[in-house]
Length: 601
Image 1 (cartoon, rainbow, N blue to C red):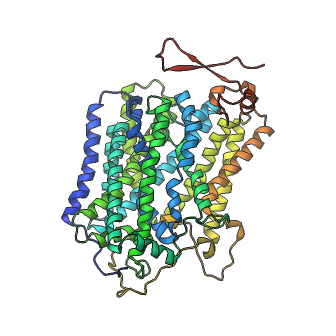
Image 2: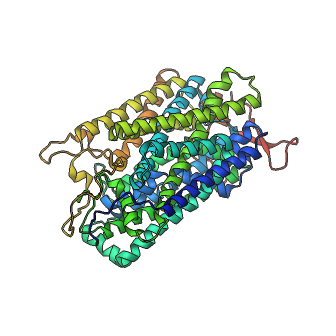
Image 3: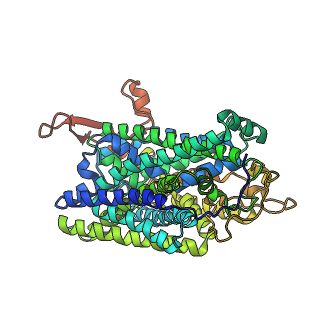
């Protein structure tokens, strides 16, 4: 539609700087406000907002926790490269949210755990709790470093700012308002950032659609290039992107975040009641679906804009994930401030993810490691420790971002691998504990080790041996309409292609090992299945628990509806005693406490 040109990608104007910095200063102001307002309140308020936060802003905050630079930059790239099939990513939180509402939110509110991994100590032992907590701290820290690095590179690409300062600016502001403002600051900043992201993505989408002549022209371009593949539900598990691989594979991965991620579980507990927590989970779907869908459609519109002159092949950008910043500079050249607004949208996604992560990891360090050693710590001491650990975590995130800049794509791939490796077995461990009363601590531990090993074998094997180009099914692009194939700016810093970091391709004549042909989107499912099967087998071999002796508060039946026949409800309890809910006269009418029925002999 338009030709690549040699405009300088470093196109930030004074207006762009003003708009961008204003959005960052607003985050700092909110953090400072809550730091002052809640300066005398307790740790419970710092991590859970006093458990009185409204489900509406909380739901919006939960949604943008899932949205980062991966969404704002990655989803358009996915649809540009693989077609509109990528739109299914927007709906991959629906099933995980249903699972969370049915099983995890009731359990979390019933037990009122401070960290989600506290459940593993109650169900199994303290060693498993600390192991899982340590894994989450490692995973989240490395992931946050990556999410800081990517938008910092985006800012570095369109401004004269050095990469060093863009990284410091990103992580420093986020660390400040998180460390000093606590959960309330995180939630309200997230709410504002959701609006910025929505407005920024909409602005690019509307402007580019107008330039290309409307959605009719976009759809024609998709049809001509084969990108109109939304209804492709090919069951072949070796294909990278189909309706099944995305809806099944990615939904399973998203279940890790919805069900056993500390950032999200803290928000569940920040609500007054279980009902409010479920409402927040439902509300979180709306911004996530809307923003993710708009980002995906933006990639389709970007393809139409660059039709006949792919900026990747024309070397106007160094990596696919520079497409959106490059597009923004093209379409908003005559509209001062809009480029800064879009970069603010990218940063909003990152800040929301990192702030939630720092707050959650600070809680894990305090409750899972420090308080068990020093249970006599005063509230004042705990508050000081919480803020110090948040600052330390922010420093570590900055260090990881620098490490990413030094190692480039290799680190990006490793981070993605590790999150997939450990996330699946962690969810499987919770599954074993909640639904299978026979599982013991040995079974859960060995199951996790085996599940992680199998996922690691598949992940690293796939990267080493590669996948056939036929299974990747990248869509065609062209440079036949380009008039200038020179790179727009030879000093452009490449944004790493984290979206397709698994897609190792080689010469067509290479013979690919069929053992590693499975789409990487199924690796988490494989890890969960392996962990559950091995965990149950090991538990049976080492002395399985007797269900009748299990604490019913720690167990969640697969099916448990009061309208079902008693035989069905009893069957799905697998012999675990039923929880008896009794109103406590010392509490308000809406509150209850849990009493166990006498254990069956």
